[in-house]
Image 1 (spheres, rainbow, N blue to C red):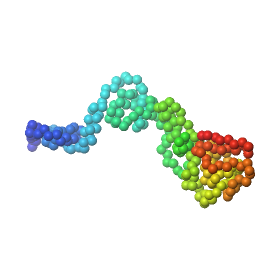
Image 2 (tube, helix red, strand yellow; image 1 turned 180 degrees about the vertical axis):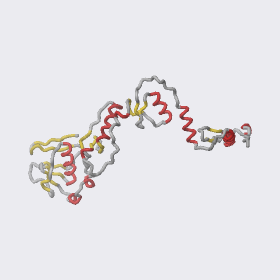
Image 3 (cartoon, rainbow, N blue to C red; image 1 turned 90 degrees about the vertical axis):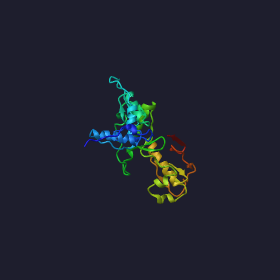
Image 4 (cartoon, rainbow, N blue to C red; image 1 turned 60 degrees about the vertical axis):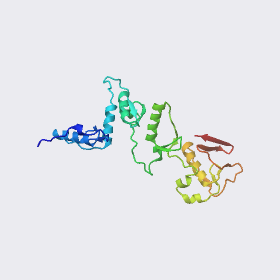
Length: 257
């Protein structure tokens, strides 16, 4: 049987937009039903669709700018880690996605060549990590990726504070220290360089920094009291990034990192 469609002029002008499955807007349900009938006459199916479908379609048409085929290859790496061959194509994509930004000039693979998706395990080697200047632990490949991006985007080089996972702070050493029973003693302790610390926690923080920054091995001489020598050094609080190195009893050096 022949499908007969009503004339569109019977539809009123009330604006109640409806999106169809072809990505087109209709003024209201009446005009949509007319278009649906016309599609059926042609053997096609037209149905209702989410408004987002029409919005995306509109943006695609609006954001299309003609990019010359002979443009110089000047790649741009976007924040989605997608490389665009030139600024024209990047601006087309940015028009469709307002949150898209330029990460740096160049191909993304220049800084993203390393695979940093490996799962971090508790037993993974400490040498696979670095501690950055903000005191955050990062995988080596992640840090190298960030270093590359910073150099290309801002023109300066970021450096690690030291190799390996970040040492605990005085506030976190109790949670980080393996043998928590030994931390119950709250009094001073004395290390192998005749330095007295006000607490075992403070010693553990300093020991970690000394080993990773100054490559200095520290042990405890007295776990239950201060150093007896009159020339001993007393440390009440260790500022972040400072390592006390005792070369001899009369020479004390502070290393800042």
